[in-house]
Amino acid sequence: MVRYFSPANCLHTQNTGLKCYNSELVTEFPMLVCLCFREKPEEIIVRPLMGNGASSSGVKRKRVPTLYIYGLSAPARAAWMTAKAAEIPVRLKYIDLFKGEHKTPEFAKINPDMTVPTLVDGDFTLWESRPIMQYMVSKWGGKHSYLYPTDLQKRAICDRLMNFDLGSVYKTVTEFTYPQLFQGKPPDPDKEAAMKKAFEYLNRNLDGGQRYMTGDDLTIVDISMATNISLTEIKGYMMDKWPDLAMWYRRMKALPYWAECNKGLYEWKTPQ
Image 1 (cartoon, one colour):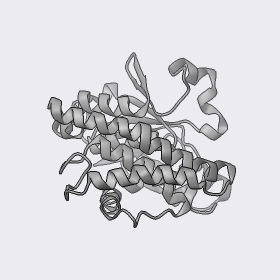
Image 2 (cartoon, helix red, strand yellow):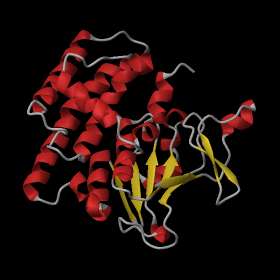
Image 3 (cartoon, helix red, strand yellow):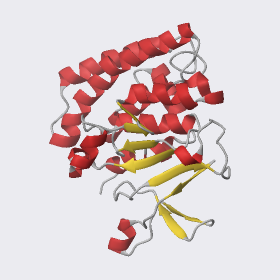
């Protein structure tokens, strides 16, 4: 179990006078905690309620890695979901891409490519979601190492599918959805056809009745692919043509941390 701590109250509440719809009162501290993505809190610290000792995944509170994210970003959501799935405590810091916060000199010193997610672990900095996911599970996964298996053959299968995710799933989904989301363009039939080919491949991959992309265990492959595919939800895209893929996606959305980590997506889906 984790709780979320912010040093500032919800700006949405301050500006409107309305009660924050996504906050909780933390009894251990006299503060109201906000998880709104519409208004960026200064920072949120995610940690297990385990006192001052080490967590079950081996990360000590004195050195909690920092993960820079943006709520709508599929790669950022995937990195956060991985931390949740592996019970890795992280310090979340929100970078608002639409306000250009990733282009500030301060952030450029952390990540010269100015992208999210970005992970800072002491004096080591890493960006790009897939290496971040692999690094976090490899270093702190503990009993959740199945998310990125140590067995070389199982890991090779994960790596193969992660490459397919980057080159086919993420590529085709963003090329289809981004022009609609950010430019107001109608769906492009050619872009949709390319995306459908990727979905057909994934559906075949699940044809053997396995629960997840690499077998019966959840891995970072599933997390990365699901957050990418979730972008199609904003425009109400249905996957009924691919029943095995649709069932897998429902299984991913049933994960206990899905709604929390993907809140930024659904706020875009909901009319403002």
